[in-house]
Every structure is written in structure tokens, then in C-alpha cells.
Length: 148
Image 1 (cartoon, rainbow, N blue to C red):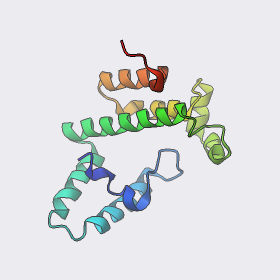
Image 2: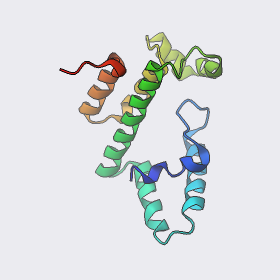
Image 3: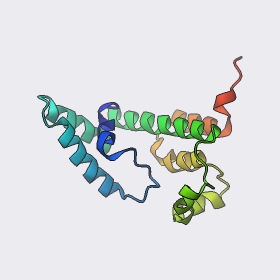
Image 4: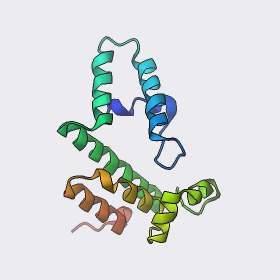
């Protein structure tokens, strides 16, 4: 399920919650991309069902998979920030500063793009352990963790 849901990115790229694409629009273009990519496979319908299960988040497996997916994205975003690959203050991110959700998060003290992603994703973390890991990511320099 985790691997299959990434297939749409082959065609549409990795759209974030802050890319000015509605959830409905992302789901529509993602579904079109998946159908096109999987069109010649015998198990196409089974794969599409798994992707839809992931997106619908109605089963325990899909909820867990969604939390894993978001946590991985939050970790990766944090690493990108630590490596100075992305910065909220860079010119290409100006549009982010005009987003009401981001403005609210910045006013609440969030400072990096990773902070914004983590706070945006927290409602998905219905299991406390995922939120605890996200808070740990946010509060620590992952590139320089000391081994104990």
C-alpha cells in the first residue's frame, strides 16, 4: 500500500499540502496518473483498490500506512532543512508566506518548513507514538544525533 500510493508521483511529482493544489484536485490528477501508469498490468484493479484504501483511511492498515507515510515525509523535510536545501525565507517559497495556515503556524512560533509540515500532519497522527516521534524530529538535529 505504501509503495503503490507513490506511483502517481511518476507523473505528477510530489505535491505537498502547501503547493496550492486542493486535496480534491490532487486526488483527481493522482487517480488519472495511476490509471495511466498501471493500464497494462493484469493486477491493475487490485493495485488501484489498495491505493484508494490508502487514500480513504477507513481501515486500520490504511490509517497506519498514512501515518508512516506522513512521518517519513516529515523526517525527510527536517533533513532537507538541516542540510539547508529548503528554507522558508528563500524567494521560491514566498508564496508559502501568503498561505493563511502557514501564517498561523509562523505566528505560533514555527520556524522551518519542516516545522510547518510536522504541525500540518499532526492531526493525521491518531496514535500518540507518531506524534511523539514527530515532536522528537522537530526538537532535534537529526544529522548530528550522538550515539549513546
